[in-house]
Image 1 (cartoon, rainbow, N blue to C red):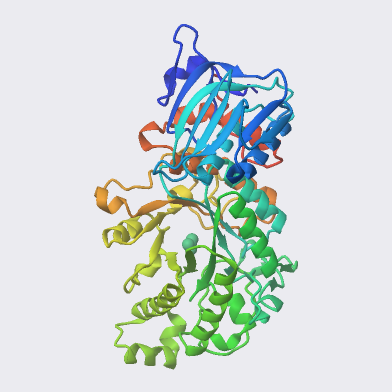
Image 2: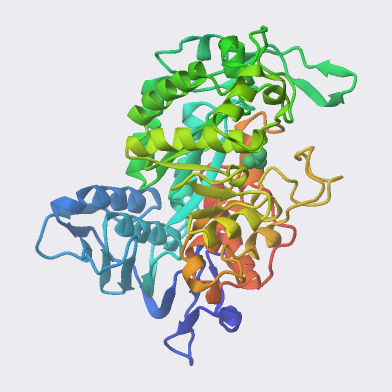
Length: 535
Ligand code: ACM
Protein backbone atom coordinates (compact mmCIF):
# COMPACT_ATOMS: atom_id res chain seq x y z
CA UNK A 1 0.00 0.00 0.00
CA UNK A 2 1.30 3.46 -0.78
CA UNK A 3 2.25 5.62 2.17
CA UNK A 4 0.77 8.68 0.55
CA UNK A 5 -2.49 9.41 -1.13
CA UNK A 6 -1.75 10.82 -4.56
CA UNK A 7 -2.12 14.46 -5.26
CA UNK A 8 -5.16 13.94 -7.45
CA UNK A 9 -6.98 13.76 -4.16
CA UNK A 10 -5.85 17.20 -3.05
CA UNK A 11 -9.10 18.60 -4.33
CA UNK A 12 -10.95 16.42 -1.86
CA UNK A 13 -8.92 17.63 1.06
CA UNK A 14 -10.17 20.79 2.66
CA UNK A 15 -7.08 21.07 4.77
CA UNK A 16 -4.24 20.93 2.35
CA UNK A 17 -2.80 23.34 -0.13
CA UNK A 18 0.01 22.45 -2.46
CA UNK A 19 2.93 24.83 -2.99
CA UNK A 20 3.30 23.94 -6.62
CA UNK A 21 0.10 23.63 -8.63
CA UNK A 22 2.06 22.75 -11.77
CA UNK A 23 3.61 19.71 -10.17
CA UNK A 24 1.61 19.05 -7.04
CA UNK A 25 3.30 17.16 -4.24
CA UNK A 26 1.92 14.05 -2.59
CA UNK A 27 -0.33 14.68 0.40
CA UNK A 28 0.82 12.84 3.52
CA UNK A 29 -1.68 10.56 5.18
CA UNK A 30 -1.92 11.98 8.67
CA UNK A 31 -4.51 11.08 11.33
CA UNK A 32 -5.53 13.21 13.10
CA UNK A 33 -5.36 15.80 10.36
CA UNK A 34 -3.27 18.79 11.49
CA UNK A 35 -4.92 22.14 12.05
CA UNK A 36 -2.83 23.71 9.28
CA UNK A 37 -0.56 22.02 6.77
CA UNK A 38 1.19 23.08 3.60
CA UNK A 39 2.78 20.41 1.47
CA UNK A 40 6.12 21.42 -0.05
CA UNK A 41 8.23 19.96 -2.81
CA UNK A 42 10.90 17.38 -2.30
CA UNK A 43 11.78 15.54 0.84
CA UNK A 44 14.30 15.25 3.63
CA UNK A 45 16.45 12.35 2.47
CA UNK A 46 19.93 12.83 3.89
CA UNK A 47 22.74 10.90 2.23
CA UNK A 48 24.54 10.16 5.50
CA UNK A 49 24.36 10.34 9.27
CA UNK A 50 22.13 12.99 10.86
CA UNK A 51 22.89 15.21 13.82
CA UNK A 52 19.91 16.06 16.05
CA UNK A 53 20.34 19.30 17.97
CA UNK A 54 18.33 19.09 21.18
CA UNK A 55 18.92 20.80 24.51
CA UNK A 56 18.88 18.91 27.78
CA UNK A 57 15.20 19.70 28.39
CA UNK A 58 14.25 17.82 25.21
CA UNK A 59 16.85 15.06 25.26
CA UNK A 60 14.15 12.45 25.89
CA UNK A 61 12.32 13.67 22.79
CA UNK A 62 15.58 13.41 20.84
CA UNK A 63 16.05 9.81 22.01
CA UNK A 64 12.53 9.05 20.84
CA UNK A 65 13.21 10.61 17.45
CA UNK A 66 16.44 8.58 17.10
CA UNK A 67 14.51 5.41 17.82
CA UNK A 68 11.83 6.35 15.27
CA UNK A 69 14.46 6.98 12.59
CA UNK A 70 16.20 3.70 13.38
CA UNK A 71 12.96 1.67 13.46
CA UNK A 72 11.84 3.04 10.10
CA UNK A 73 15.14 2.19 8.37
CA UNK A 74 16.54 5.72 8.46
CA UNK A 75 20.12 7.01 8.73
CA UNK A 76 22.43 6.90 11.73
CA UNK A 77 21.70 9.68 14.21
CA UNK A 78 23.63 11.44 16.94
CA UNK A 79 22.34 13.94 19.48
CA UNK A 80 24.13 17.15 20.47
CA UNK A 81 22.89 19.84 22.89
CA UNK A 82 23.72 22.77 20.59
CA UNK A 83 25.60 23.74 17.44
CA UNK A 84 24.90 22.58 13.90
CA UNK A 85 22.69 19.76 12.78
CA UNK A 86 20.11 18.92 10.15
CA UNK A 87 17.40 18.28 12.74
CA UNK A 88 16.51 20.71 15.52
CA UNK A 89 14.12 20.05 18.40
CA UNK A 90 13.10 22.75 20.84
CA UNK A 91 10.41 24.12 23.08
CA UNK A 92 9.19 27.69 22.68
CA UNK A 93 6.14 28.59 24.76
CA UNK A 94 3.65 30.52 22.63
CA UNK A 95 0.59 30.62 24.88
CA UNK A 96 -0.85 27.41 23.48
CA UNK A 97 -0.95 23.94 25.07
CA UNK A 98 0.12 20.74 23.34
CA UNK A 99 0.89 22.64 20.12
CA UNK A 100 3.82 22.28 17.72
CA UNK A 101 5.27 23.70 14.54
CA UNK A 102 7.05 21.39 12.14
CA UNK A 103 9.01 22.33 9.07
CA UNK A 104 10.50 19.58 6.91
CA UNK A 105 12.46 20.40 3.77
CA UNK A 106 15.29 18.87 1.78
CA UNK A 107 17.63 20.89 4.00
CA UNK A 108 16.48 19.65 7.36
CA UNK A 109 13.80 19.34 10.02
CA UNK A 110 12.81 21.95 12.58
CA UNK A 111 10.31 20.91 15.24
CA UNK A 112 9.24 23.26 18.02
CA UNK A 113 6.72 22.43 20.71
CA UNK A 114 4.79 25.01 22.71
CA UNK A 115 5.46 22.66 25.63
CA UNK A 116 6.92 19.14 26.06
CA UNK A 117 3.58 17.52 25.13
CA UNK A 118 3.39 19.58 21.95
CA UNK A 119 6.89 18.51 20.96
CA UNK A 120 5.88 14.91 21.60
CA UNK A 121 2.85 15.31 19.30
CA UNK A 122 5.11 16.76 16.63
CA UNK A 123 7.15 13.56 16.87
CA UNK A 124 3.97 11.52 16.44
CA UNK A 125 3.29 13.47 13.25
CA UNK A 126 6.86 12.80 12.08
CA UNK A 127 6.28 9.11 12.79
CA UNK A 128 3.39 9.13 10.31
CA UNK A 129 5.57 10.92 7.77
CA UNK A 130 8.29 8.25 7.89
CA UNK A 131 8.10 4.95 6.00
CA UNK A 132 6.20 2.08 7.59
CA UNK A 133 8.68 -0.02 9.61
CA UNK A 134 9.61 -3.14 7.70
CA UNK A 135 8.13 -1.82 4.44
CA UNK A 136 11.55 -1.62 2.77
CA UNK A 137 10.59 1.78 1.35
CA UNK A 138 13.40 4.22 0.71
CA UNK A 139 13.77 6.40 3.80
CA UNK A 140 12.66 9.98 3.39
CA UNK A 141 10.28 12.48 4.95
CA UNK A 142 8.16 14.61 2.61
CA UNK A 143 8.52 18.39 2.76
CA UNK A 144 5.72 19.92 4.82
CA UNK A 145 4.99 22.87 7.02
CA UNK A 146 2.60 22.17 9.85
CA UNK A 147 1.23 24.37 12.60
CA UNK A 148 -0.88 22.20 14.84
CA UNK A 149 -2.75 22.25 18.14
CA UNK A 150 -5.62 20.20 19.55
CA UNK A 151 -9.25 21.30 19.46
CA UNK A 152 -9.96 19.88 22.94
CA UNK A 153 -7.86 19.48 26.09
CA UNK A 154 -9.53 16.14 26.99
CA UNK A 155 -9.05 13.39 24.40
CA UNK A 156 -10.02 10.16 26.07
CA UNK A 157 -10.20 6.43 25.64
CA UNK A 158 -11.55 4.16 28.34
CA UNK A 159 -10.93 0.49 29.08
CA UNK A 160 -13.14 -1.71 31.24
CA UNK A 161 -10.89 -4.23 32.99
CA UNK A 162 -13.68 -5.26 35.37
CA UNK A 163 -15.64 -7.45 32.99
CA UNK A 164 -12.45 -8.95 31.62
CA UNK A 165 -9.00 -8.48 33.06
CA UNK A 166 -6.19 -7.42 30.72
CA UNK A 167 -2.50 -7.76 31.55
CA UNK A 168 -0.13 -4.84 32.13
CA UNK A 169 1.61 -5.49 28.80
CA UNK A 170 -1.66 -4.98 26.96
CA UNK A 171 -2.51 -1.81 28.86
CA UNK A 172 0.89 -0.44 27.80
CA UNK A 173 0.21 -1.40 24.18
CA UNK A 174 -3.15 0.40 24.41
CA UNK A 175 -1.35 3.49 25.73
CA UNK A 176 1.17 3.29 22.87
CA UNK A 177 -1.59 3.33 20.27
CA UNK A 178 -3.35 6.17 22.12
CA UNK A 179 -0.19 8.28 22.10
CA UNK A 180 0.28 7.76 18.37
CA UNK A 181 -3.22 9.18 17.87
CA UNK A 182 -2.52 12.14 20.18
CA UNK A 183 -5.09 10.94 22.73
CA UNK A 184 -4.13 12.20 26.18
CA UNK A 185 -6.49 10.64 28.76
CA UNK A 186 -6.81 6.98 29.70
CA UNK A 187 -9.92 6.28 31.77
CA UNK A 188 -9.21 3.02 33.61
CA UNK A 189 -12.46 1.36 34.73
CA UNK A 190 -11.01 -0.67 37.60
CA UNK A 191 -13.98 -1.94 39.58
CA UNK A 192 -17.15 -3.74 38.59
CA UNK A 193 -19.81 -6.20 39.74
CA UNK A 194 -17.79 -8.93 38.01
CA UNK A 195 -14.35 -8.06 39.36
CA UNK A 196 -12.35 -5.65 41.54
CA UNK A 197 -8.97 -5.09 39.86
CA UNK A 198 -7.06 -2.60 42.05
CA UNK A 199 -4.99 -3.75 45.01
CA UNK A 200 -5.97 -1.78 48.12
CA UNK A 201 -3.65 -2.48 51.05
CA UNK A 202 -6.17 -1.55 53.76
CA UNK A 203 -8.79 -3.88 52.27
CA UNK A 204 -7.02 -7.03 51.09
CA UNK A 205 -10.21 -9.01 50.55
CA UNK A 206 -11.06 -6.71 47.63
CA UNK A 207 -8.48 -8.61 45.60
CA UNK A 208 -8.38 -11.87 47.57
CA UNK A 209 -12.11 -12.34 47.02
CA UNK A 210 -13.28 -9.58 44.68
CA UNK A 211 -10.82 -10.15 41.83
CA UNK A 212 -12.09 -13.65 40.98
CA UNK A 213 -15.42 -14.81 39.65
CA UNK A 214 -16.07 -18.51 39.51
CA UNK A 215 -17.35 -18.43 35.93
CA UNK A 216 -19.05 -16.25 33.33
CA UNK A 217 -22.54 -16.47 31.90
CA UNK A 218 -22.57 -17.79 28.36
CA UNK A 219 -23.85 -15.15 26.00
CA UNK A 220 -27.64 -15.27 25.72
CA UNK A 221 -27.89 -17.90 28.48
CA UNK A 222 -29.47 -15.81 31.18
CA UNK A 223 -32.70 -17.78 31.18
CA UNK A 224 -32.08 -20.50 32.02
CA UNK A 225 -28.66 -19.45 33.28
CA UNK A 226 -25.73 -21.42 31.86
CA UNK A 227 -22.19 -20.57 32.93
CA UNK A 228 -18.97 -21.36 31.09
CA UNK A 229 -17.45 -23.07 34.14
CA UNK A 230 -14.19 -21.11 33.69
CA UNK A 231 -12.84 -19.07 36.60
CA UNK A 232 -11.86 -15.50 35.63
CA UNK A 233 -9.42 -13.66 37.90
CA UNK A 234 -6.94 -10.81 37.84
CA UNK A 235 -5.89 -7.60 39.52
CA UNK A 236 -3.15 -4.97 39.35
CA UNK A 237 -0.77 -4.54 42.26
CA UNK A 238 -0.11 -1.01 43.41
CA UNK A 239 3.36 -1.23 41.87
CA UNK A 240 1.82 -2.25 38.56
CA UNK A 241 -0.65 0.64 38.67
CA UNK A 242 2.23 3.03 39.40
CA UNK A 243 4.13 1.51 36.50
CA UNK A 244 1.16 2.18 34.19
CA UNK A 245 0.82 5.76 35.47
CA UNK A 246 4.53 6.38 34.78
CA UNK A 247 4.39 4.70 31.37
CA UNK A 248 1.38 6.84 30.44
CA UNK A 249 3.04 10.03 31.74
CA UNK A 250 6.05 9.42 29.47
CA UNK A 251 3.51 9.55 26.63
CA UNK A 252 1.74 12.65 27.99
CA UNK A 253 -1.28 10.57 28.92
CA UNK A 254 -3.12 11.13 32.20
CA UNK A 255 -4.64 8.04 33.79
CA UNK A 256 -8.02 8.63 35.44
CA UNK A 257 -8.95 5.74 37.73
CA UNK A 258 -12.61 4.84 38.15
CA UNK A 259 -13.86 3.38 41.42
CA UNK A 260 -17.57 2.66 40.93
CA UNK A 261 -20.04 3.75 43.60
CA UNK A 262 -22.68 3.32 44.86
CA UNK A 263 -23.59 0.76 42.16
CA UNK A 264 -21.61 -1.73 40.10
CA UNK A 265 -20.15 -2.79 43.44
CA UNK A 266 -21.04 -6.48 43.79
CA UNK A 267 -17.40 -7.64 43.74
CA UNK A 268 -16.63 -5.27 46.64
CA UNK A 269 -19.74 -6.47 48.49
CA UNK A 270 -18.65 -10.09 47.97
CA UNK A 271 -15.42 -9.15 49.76
CA UNK A 272 -17.05 -6.99 52.47
CA UNK A 273 -20.77 -7.95 52.74
CA UNK A 274 -21.27 -5.55 55.66
CA UNK A 275 -21.04 -2.62 53.22
CA UNK A 276 -24.38 -3.61 51.66
CA UNK A 277 -27.75 -2.77 53.16
CA UNK A 278 -27.97 -6.37 54.36
CA UNK A 279 -24.95 -8.48 55.30
CA UNK A 280 -26.00 -11.61 53.45
CA UNK A 281 -23.08 -13.31 51.69
CA UNK A 282 -22.69 -12.60 47.98
CA UNK A 283 -20.56 -13.90 45.16
CA UNK A 284 -18.63 -11.87 42.61
CA UNK A 285 -21.20 -11.62 39.83
CA UNK A 286 -21.09 -14.06 36.92
CA UNK A 287 -23.73 -12.23 34.87
CA UNK A 288 -23.80 -8.89 33.06
CA UNK A 289 -26.32 -6.07 33.38
CA UNK A 290 -27.48 -3.90 36.26
CA UNK A 291 -27.37 -5.38 39.75
CA UNK A 292 -29.67 -4.45 42.65
CA UNK A 293 -26.93 -4.83 45.25
CA UNK A 294 -25.24 -1.48 45.84
CA UNK A 295 -23.25 0.12 48.67
CA UNK A 296 -25.46 1.11 51.60
CA UNK A 297 -25.00 4.82 52.50
CA UNK A 298 -23.67 3.89 55.94
CA UNK A 299 -20.74 5.41 57.85
CA UNK A 300 -18.95 2.07 57.35
CA UNK A 301 -19.30 2.51 53.58
CA UNK A 302 -17.96 6.08 53.65
CA UNK A 303 -15.02 5.04 55.83
CA UNK A 304 -14.29 2.23 53.37
CA UNK A 305 -14.61 4.41 50.25
CA UNK A 306 -12.47 7.17 51.74
CA UNK A 307 -9.85 4.57 52.61
CA UNK A 308 -9.94 3.18 49.08
CA UNK A 309 -9.83 6.65 47.50
CA UNK A 310 -6.94 7.70 49.72
CA UNK A 311 -4.84 4.82 48.39
CA UNK A 312 -6.05 5.48 44.84
CA UNK A 313 -5.04 9.15 45.12
CA UNK A 314 -1.63 8.01 46.33
CA UNK A 315 -1.16 6.05 43.12
CA UNK A 316 -2.88 8.27 40.55
CA UNK A 317 -1.84 11.93 40.40
CA UNK A 318 -4.72 12.85 38.02
CA UNK A 319 -6.82 15.84 39.01
CA UNK A 320 -9.95 13.91 38.08
CA UNK A 321 -11.05 10.86 40.03
CA UNK A 322 -13.98 8.99 38.45
CA UNK A 323 -16.57 7.65 40.89
CA UNK A 324 -18.93 6.01 38.41
CA UNK A 325 -22.42 6.82 39.71
CA UNK A 326 -24.26 5.12 36.83
CA UNK A 327 -27.04 2.58 36.91
CA UNK A 328 -27.91 2.54 40.61
CA UNK A 329 -31.16 0.66 41.32
CA UNK A 330 -32.83 2.05 44.42
CA UNK A 331 -34.46 -1.22 45.59
CA UNK A 332 -32.03 -1.90 48.44
CA UNK A 333 -32.23 1.67 49.72
CA UNK A 334 -36.04 1.59 49.60
CA UNK A 335 -35.95 -1.53 51.80
CA UNK A 336 -33.24 -0.26 54.15
CA UNK A 337 -34.14 1.28 57.52
CA UNK A 338 -30.75 2.97 57.56
CA UNK A 339 -31.18 4.54 54.12
CA UNK A 340 -34.69 5.70 55.00
CA UNK A 341 -33.44 7.19 58.26
CA UNK A 342 -30.82 9.23 56.36
CA UNK A 343 -33.49 10.47 53.95
CA UNK A 344 -35.55 11.67 56.97
CA UNK A 345 -32.60 13.08 58.87
CA UNK A 346 -31.22 15.02 55.90
CA UNK A 347 -34.64 16.21 54.69
CA UNK A 348 -34.18 14.49 51.33
CA UNK A 349 -37.13 13.97 49.00
CA UNK A 350 -36.35 10.42 47.91
CA UNK A 351 -33.68 7.86 47.00
CA UNK A 352 -32.53 9.97 44.03
CA UNK A 353 -31.68 12.80 46.42
CA UNK A 354 -30.03 10.23 48.67
CA UNK A 355 -27.75 9.28 45.78
CA UNK A 356 -26.98 12.95 45.22
CA UNK A 357 -26.22 13.31 48.96
CA UNK A 358 -23.91 10.28 48.69
CA UNK A 359 -22.04 11.70 45.70
CA UNK A 360 -21.80 15.16 47.30
CA UNK A 361 -20.15 13.64 50.36
CA UNK A 362 -17.56 11.94 48.19
CA UNK A 363 -17.12 15.14 46.18
CA UNK A 364 -16.32 17.08 49.37
CA UNK A 365 -13.78 14.42 50.32
CA UNK A 366 -12.07 14.55 46.92
CA UNK A 367 -12.11 18.37 46.86
CA UNK A 368 -10.58 18.50 50.32
CA UNK A 369 -7.78 16.38 48.86
CA UNK A 370 -7.28 18.70 45.91
CA UNK A 371 -8.99 16.47 43.37
CA UNK A 372 -12.06 16.84 41.15
CA UNK A 373 -14.91 14.37 40.98
CA UNK A 374 -16.09 13.10 37.64
CA UNK A 375 -19.07 10.79 37.21
CA UNK A 376 -21.49 9.36 34.65
CA UNK A 377 -24.50 11.55 33.88
CA UNK A 378 -26.74 9.87 36.46
CA UNK A 379 -24.96 12.07 39.03
CA UNK A 380 -27.20 14.87 37.76
CA UNK A 381 -30.25 13.11 39.19
CA UNK A 382 -31.30 14.45 42.57
CA UNK A 383 -28.94 17.42 42.17
CA UNK A 384 -25.38 17.72 40.86
CA UNK A 385 -22.59 18.02 43.41
CA UNK A 386 -20.85 21.41 43.23
CA UNK A 387 -17.62 21.07 41.32
CA UNK A 388 -18.58 17.76 39.71
CA UNK A 389 -17.73 17.08 36.08
CA UNK A 390 -20.20 15.03 34.05
CA UNK A 391 -19.38 12.28 31.58
CA UNK A 392 -22.43 12.24 29.33
CA UNK A 393 -23.14 8.71 28.07
CA UNK A 394 -26.95 8.41 27.75
CA UNK A 395 -26.89 10.80 24.82
CA UNK A 396 -25.67 14.38 25.07
CA UNK A 397 -28.60 15.68 27.14
CA UNK A 398 -26.82 15.22 30.48
CA UNK A 399 -23.78 17.01 29.12
CA UNK A 400 -25.90 19.87 27.80
CA UNK A 401 -27.71 20.25 31.13
CA UNK A 402 -24.44 20.20 33.08
CA UNK A 403 -22.72 22.70 30.75
CA UNK A 404 -25.70 25.04 31.12
CA UNK A 405 -25.28 24.80 34.90
CA UNK A 406 -21.63 25.79 34.50
CA UNK A 407 -20.16 22.32 35.05
CA UNK A 408 -17.45 20.79 32.91
CA UNK A 409 -18.46 17.96 30.61
CA UNK A 410 -16.92 15.07 28.69
CA UNK A 411 -19.06 13.79 25.82
CA UNK A 412 -19.24 10.05 25.43
CA UNK A 413 -22.70 9.19 24.07
CA UNK A 414 -23.58 5.58 23.26
CA UNK A 415 -24.71 6.43 19.72
CA UNK A 416 -21.28 7.69 18.72
CA UNK A 417 -18.66 6.61 21.22
CA UNK A 418 -19.49 3.13 22.57
CA UNK A 419 -16.87 0.95 20.96
CA UNK A 420 -18.48 -2.22 22.35
CA UNK A 421 -21.31 -1.81 19.82
CA UNK A 422 -20.86 -3.83 16.67
CA UNK A 423 -19.36 -2.04 13.69
CA UNK A 424 -21.38 -3.44 10.82
CA UNK A 425 -24.31 -5.75 10.20
CA UNK A 426 -24.80 -7.84 13.34
CA UNK A 427 -24.88 -11.07 11.32
CA UNK A 428 -21.35 -10.59 10.00
CA UNK A 429 -19.63 -9.02 12.99
CA UNK A 430 -17.73 -11.43 15.21
CA UNK A 431 -18.36 -9.61 18.47
CA UNK A 432 -21.02 -7.27 19.70
CA UNK A 433 -22.42 -5.80 22.84
CA UNK A 434 -25.47 -7.91 23.47
CA UNK A 435 -27.33 -4.96 24.98
CA UNK A 436 -26.94 -2.58 22.06
CA UNK A 437 -29.86 -2.42 19.69
CA UNK A 438 -27.97 -0.71 16.90
CA UNK A 439 -24.60 -0.74 15.19
CA UNK A 440 -21.97 1.96 15.50
CA UNK A 441 -20.09 2.08 12.20
CA UNK A 442 -16.98 4.17 11.69
CA UNK A 443 -18.82 7.00 9.91
CA UNK A 444 -21.13 7.43 12.89
CA UNK A 445 -18.18 7.89 15.21
CA UNK A 446 -16.55 10.34 12.85
CA UNK A 447 -19.62 12.51 12.32
CA UNK A 448 -20.07 13.34 16.01
CA UNK A 449 -19.28 16.89 17.07
CA UNK A 450 -18.71 16.96 20.85
CA UNK A 451 -20.06 20.50 21.04
CA UNK A 452 -23.86 20.39 20.68
CA UNK A 453 -25.26 23.13 18.44
CA UNK A 454 -27.69 24.24 21.15
CA UNK A 455 -24.95 25.44 23.52
CA UNK A 456 -23.91 29.10 23.58
CA UNK A 457 -20.18 29.75 23.10
CA UNK A 458 -19.89 30.41 26.84
CA UNK A 459 -21.60 27.09 27.70
CA UNK A 460 -19.62 25.25 25.01
CA UNK A 461 -16.40 26.15 26.80
CA UNK A 462 -17.42 23.60 29.45
CA UNK A 463 -17.17 20.77 26.91
CA UNK A 464 -13.61 19.66 27.65
CA UNK A 465 -13.64 16.95 25.01
CA UNK A 466 -14.86 13.47 24.23
CA UNK A 467 -14.05 9.87 25.02
CA UNK A 468 -14.54 6.42 23.48
CA UNK A 469 -15.78 3.78 25.90
CA UNK A 470 -14.71 0.15 25.70
CA UNK A 471 -16.90 -2.12 27.81
CA UNK A 472 -15.52 -5.61 27.66
CA UNK A 473 -18.35 -8.04 28.45
CA UNK A 474 -17.89 -9.60 25.00
CA UNK A 475 -14.14 -8.99 24.69
CA UNK A 476 -12.26 -11.80 26.33
CA UNK A 477 -8.89 -11.21 24.67
CA UNK A 478 -6.66 -8.24 23.77
CA UNK A 479 -7.14 -9.03 20.07
CA UNK A 480 -10.89 -8.60 20.42
CA UNK A 481 -10.43 -5.29 22.20
CA UNK A 482 -8.16 -4.14 19.38
CA UNK A 483 -10.67 -5.23 16.76
CA UNK A 484 -13.42 -3.25 18.46
CA UNK A 485 -11.36 -0.14 19.18
CA UNK A 486 -9.54 0.42 15.89
CA UNK A 487 -10.09 2.22 13.61
CA UNK A 488 -12.95 3.82 15.57
CA UNK A 489 -10.31 5.34 17.88
CA UNK A 490 -8.74 6.88 14.77
CA UNK A 491 -12.08 8.59 14.05
CA UNK A 492 -12.28 9.70 17.69
CA UNK A 493 -8.74 11.09 17.51
CA UNK A 494 -9.63 13.31 14.57
CA UNK A 495 -12.89 14.33 16.26
CA UNK A 496 -11.10 15.67 19.32
CA UNK A 497 -7.95 17.04 17.65
CA UNK A 498 -8.81 18.53 14.27
CA UNK A 499 -10.70 21.83 13.95
CA UNK A 500 -14.33 21.03 13.15
CA UNK A 501 -14.40 22.94 9.81
CA UNK A 502 -11.46 20.84 8.55
CA UNK A 503 -13.06 17.48 9.29
CA UNK A 504 -14.27 15.53 6.30
CA UNK A 505 -15.15 11.83 6.42
CA UNK A 506 -14.36 11.13 2.74
CA UNK A 507 -10.93 12.69 3.15
CA UNK A 508 -10.38 10.76 6.41
CA UNK A 509 -11.13 7.50 4.57
CA UNK A 510 -8.50 8.35 1.96
CA UNK A 511 -5.84 8.87 4.63
CA UNK A 512 -6.82 5.92 6.79
CA UNK A 513 -5.41 2.93 4.83
CA UNK A 514 -1.82 4.17 5.06
CA UNK A 515 -2.27 4.94 8.75
CA UNK A 516 -3.72 1.47 9.34
CA UNK A 517 -0.78 -0.11 7.54
CA UNK A 518 1.47 1.56 10.12
CA UNK A 519 -0.90 0.48 12.90
CA UNK A 520 -0.78 -3.15 11.68
CA UNK A 521 3.03 -3.03 11.65
CA UNK A 522 2.87 -2.60 15.44
CA UNK A 523 1.15 -5.98 15.71
CA UNK A 524 -2.17 -4.41 16.69
CA UNK A 525 -5.43 -5.77 15.27
CA UNK A 526 -8.19 -3.65 13.78
CA UNK A 527 -11.44 -4.08 11.91
CA UNK A 528 -10.74 -3.90 8.18
CA UNK A 529 -12.42 -1.05 6.35
CA UNK A 530 -15.58 -1.91 4.46
CA UNK A 531 -14.13 -0.55 1.26
CA UNK A 532 -10.62 0.44 0.43
CA UNK A 533 -10.46 3.77 -1.38
CA UNK A 534 -8.89 3.39 -4.79
CA UNK A 535 -7.57 7.00 -5.08
C1 ACM B 1 -22.41 3.13 31.35
O1 ACM B 1 -22.31 2.73 30.18
N1 ACM B 1 -23.16 2.47 32.22
C2 ACM B 1 -21.71 4.30 31.80
